[in-house]
Every structure is written in structure tokens, then in C-alpha cells.
Image (cartoon, rainbow, N blue to C red; front, side, top):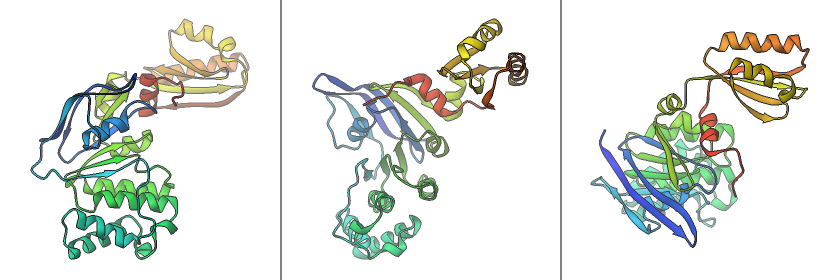
Length: 302
């Protein structure tokens, strides 16, 4: 694949806070690139630098495309509440040099694809929050940009709207390279060709979901939630079996296991032997969220 965007050693400080700390990455043409991190990780600052809205203290960004048009859907809603959906899309298209006919045709296509056809002539200020979010995405894509930066594009959307937006983003990826910032691990895993996890302004890992999962180990997970104290009843057994585990509360834990079925039977045996009352017991594959939490920690961020 050809590279469409390169970021080299990006650094940005706000006072004494180092928001972006030497980030370097490459984005391939026609891919959906997921940009993940907890609150305050530097995602939005990095995106603002890459799309030209913020100047880095050091480092550079190179867009390797003859057509350097970009689209930006910011995290905060940006619409004209006093204009209809069609009016502001046409206006935005003409700002990018499209003719009136071109912008009207593209506006109709976007309104249809994002489920807003019935709201074509409604004022944007009268739309629900989810509809305004979809309109915000349409404004970023009206001119068919070479690269689209979508910062939390699915925030506040209901399940049906998330599926609609996800399917549309997938449908344009070969024409428009998408750099997607999101907190939704499931959506990131379903949408992204590659994923970058950052924290405290630094890149922790980049790769496909499968590559990242392999690097973090191939264990499956057993989750257990019991009424009694897990440290009191199960920790001695776990230590004897050399199982890797993590307590998520006094009564809940998950175990990382290579041989799920034998471990499943062993743990159930201990549960039965000690007469423990189980609220939940299940075997599942490691998810992107598990890896994310393992890399960035469980503590809340402001």
C-alpha cells in the first residue's frame, strides 16, 4: 500500500503538560486507521496537528497525496443551527470549490446514506443529538476528501445509528482514507484496518487487531463472579496452578489461560468442592478492550 500520511516525532506542550510526546506513524492510502487512548492520552491534540489545526512544538506532518483535501469531523458538534441540512451541506461544498449542482448532488447522496433524507429541509437546530452528529459527519465528507479525520464520530449515537455510520465509513474507505479517534473498543475493532493505541502522548502499539492480540499473548479468559471473597476461596488454588489472574473486585476475577477446557474443569471443581455460590462464570476470547486496559491501566482519567 502507498503511504498517504506521515507524522514524524510530533511534540506538543501546553504549559507544563506534555500532550504529545514524540509520536511517529504512517497511514496507508485507503485504510481506516483507528486512534485509541484514554482521556488525556493526546488523541485529539495529535489529530489537530495532523489535520493542520494546531502547530506542533517540533516534528512534522507530510500528506503524500496530489489531492491534499482533508475533511474534519471534530469531537465537539459544529453545525449552523439556523440553516437547513441541505443548505449547510451545499454551502460547505461550495466553500471547497464545488459547483452548486455538484454540491447539491453530493448533499443528497450523503443525506440518504446517513439516514437524513426526511430532514433535508429541516433546520439543523431542530434535529436530535444523534441526527446532528450524523450531519456533522456529512459536513466533513461533502467534498470527498483524500483524508477524513473523524474524532469520536459515533459519540451519542443509538445502536441503529452506529451501524449506519459504521457501514458508511466502510463504504468510502477505498476513496477516502479515514483516521478515526474513538473510545468505543468494539467499534474500533469492527471498523479499523489498523489500530494505534496511545497513552500520555506516546504510542504504545500499532498494528492490526490480530497482530496486537498476538503480541499481548494468545490466552483465552475465564471470568468468574462469586458471592464469597475470591481472595479467600480461590487465590491459594490459583497460585498452586500457576494461573495468571487479575482481581476486578473482591468478588470478581478473570484468569488468562492457554488450555481453557482443562482449566475450566479445574476451577469448577474447586467451586463445587468449596460450595461457592457463582453469579457468573464464562469463557471468552481476549478482546481489544482487555488489551487496552492492560496497556493503559484501570484508573480513571480527567
